[in-house]
Length: 440
Image 1 (cartoon, one colour):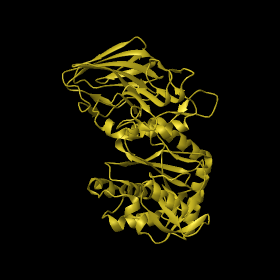
Image 2 (spheres, helix red, strand yellow; image 1 turned 90 degrees about the horizontal axis):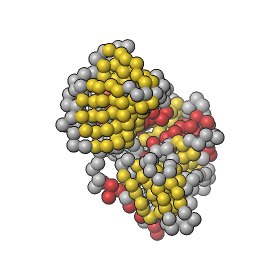
Image 3 (cartoon, helix red, strand yellow; image 1 turned 120 degrees about the vertical axis):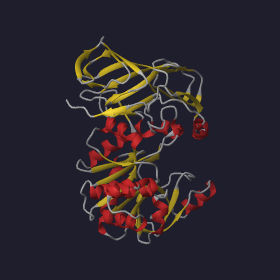
Image 4 (cartoon, one colour; image 1 turned 60 degrees about the horizontal axis):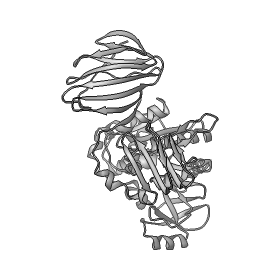
């Protein structure tokens, strides 16, 4: 089974845990199976569920450059990634991922591909349905096979699919745009299904449609001209113009966890992190990533979320309207996951920034230099090797390493290693970084 997971968006509706680098699908908020008290993110959960249903499934994540490090950090280096050089909506993203499967991964034009969002909250029945979706596409009765989710309430958030019949698999009669509440009730009464953005096709179909709509030769050519492509959704470019299209009904658990209100409904615990609720709290959830306690007393229908980015205290229903307020905030990214580990900003002054860096065992930073700042590394735990201007030195907890502006440097983690990094300079910027090849 070839699965393309669409991973996009900045996830501002889940501020302060999400930002332009750390989208909602990377927030570790779901209890992992097993005796350990560990949490996993949406992308980790979906990836794990896919592999449980089909261990040999080829999973490719279509995403932006800013999310690649977080994906490698959470899923490892072996997952396939189709990187969008810039945002161009779902049709260019799916066309690029399809070309990637064919030209880079060597997937045959006759094989089926299933496309779905990376962030639904679903049970195992959903992944069985994905397999059936691919099997239906393989039959060739239709060029596209969509998953239609049985509505559980009249929603204004989704488009609707109107099937010809009530059979488990049916041809599609028409599509409906996102409606108002009263219109949604009418659609449901007529047997319409939610369009959850899940569909399957033979690879050659989308590849052919891509060539009809875009002038390109292969994946590499498409990637090179990606920033010139028209921004258009897959629904508008392909789905609504396709006469041979089917829909398969899905009645299992399916939730779009796009807001704090819906996300807290899926949380198994009232609190994550250090938090206390008194007995007079009702329907209160707390997610705390800070190293200070949160105490809630006498609250009702409230979500509290704290991270280095900020603190949210909101009525759950009102939390759905957070985006325009977050758009006005223009602060520095305070936490990010990288392919080698993570970093968290601890303090910002006019001429200095203090950061806590965690490197995973066996990983290293890029070999790099800065022109406008000095850096000091204070190793607080673990062991590793630093390389400064080509000279290697073993380091452990308690060691201090100083690097002047212009010198090349990196650190390689032997064990997990944690470092307090102090940056000192007049113009500290993420753009002040020159990368080099490292021969070791």
